[in-house]
Length: 71
Image (cartoon, rainbow, N blue to C red; front, side, top):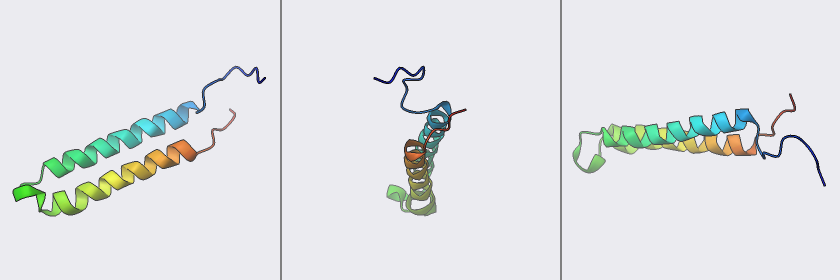
């Protein structure tokens, strides 16, 4: 058995990056709601919002796959 002090699977930086990614995802959805065109067919609903949302998911995957440092 491994008797290490830290039993968490991620470091504090991983959790911080996950929270940042979650905020970016929610920001992307929020940007999509600001579109003034009917049914969201404007630039915010079709381009900027989805790109920001995908960027948030990329940040999330990076935070999960990043190896925590031992410091």
